[in-house]
Image 1 (spheres, rainbow, N blue to C red):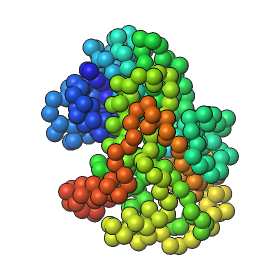
Image 2: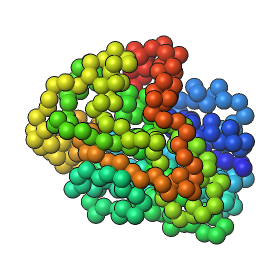
Image 3: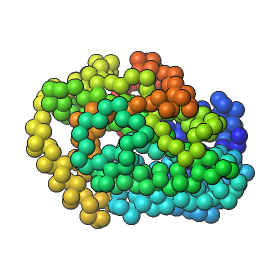
Image 4: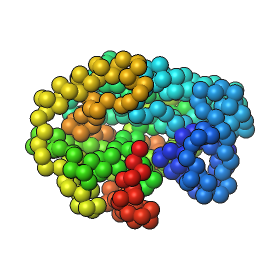
Length: 344
């Protein structure tokens, strides 16, 4: 198929490009002119279209002749006002959907997130599946707008226009300079990450980058996926704090050992969330701590991926293999110091 990938200059988007090319697709990428194209410039055979999701005219040009869309671009940080998140994540997705239908595209794969189901009052959630409802109150603008965009995508499904949403959790692996793993490793290297576990195990489903990318390609080809969302994850969940200790050992960092005062941190996170709703502050910097970031490190959240294994494919890369590939890549770019210096 002739395929358009948004967010291709980013971490997961670049792996989706690779997976599409392995599948024999012709690939066009939609990127901003100021995007870092250092990796994409090394990939032969791709076509580059410039523009962003706020530019309807650029989207229509990029969509010409496209049969399948992989929509990976999004505002994913905690930096930004509600208006910015809505414009990029919700309105941007709607612009892309409209252009795709007008251009005659047949497939639309939306890279969503399990964060779309993270509510304010949630506790541990083990083995949840796609029947889990959307929450009534969201932890942050990112979760809220990813859920809204996902609903738009699933509602747009038609017999001649198959739409689906994939929810990979905690995507990690080579070429990641802004996700949870390099950020936490950077904190461990400086000794600034406390142990937030409270002495209990915290389990999480994660998703190696190639597992997520291959699921995207399969979703653009598979039958019976229209109008459906799927959790995508590695074969087995991990215990978060044991994984961080292993990560520290592999790369010469200090595992988290200093216990934090959880009630104090929870109070700080709540206060920060309230203060950072003010647009002048939200537009300038990310909060130092948030209920969302605390939830990722203190709540057990695992997913039943049997639907994805039935309709798409089973993940091919397990955690140990992925960690070995990550270590090889880090060494190839000059070691962990280089890796950490590039953390965004």
